[in-house]
Length: 153
Image (cartoon, rainbow, N blue to C red; front, side):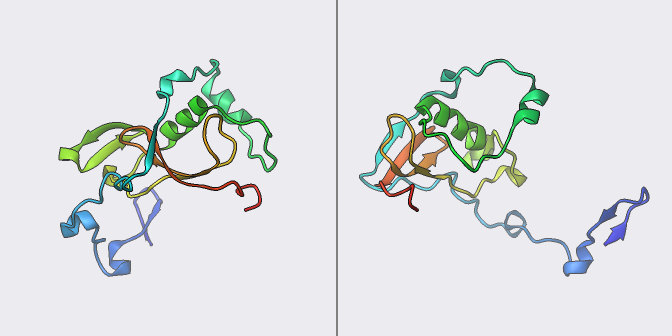
């Protein structure tokens, strides 16, 4: 750890053996923007995120009123609500850098998002309980398998 002139601490590259060698610096290819859809898999279109209208509320108020819950409502969420949640956590605004990176609703170093979003769906209106994967490039779900035993798992 080194100290800057203003007193802030920072990690020095020489402490771990030199400059950090990222995949980009090594010239490795970028990961795919999203994994391919399995052959024969059912793909479901999601409602556009704009389909859900949220009541106006001050951003600070919304953050202050947020709470973690351990007991969940028996009421299902709607498909537009799920669509909005997926878009706000993984949505793609734009494909950039000749198709190797994306601008999304969440930041990522180098605009590389090497992750996938899987859902264990139990109570969503109009969806069969089961396992799904989100396709952020097309804003769709891939139905991977049914699973009626999710509450017990």
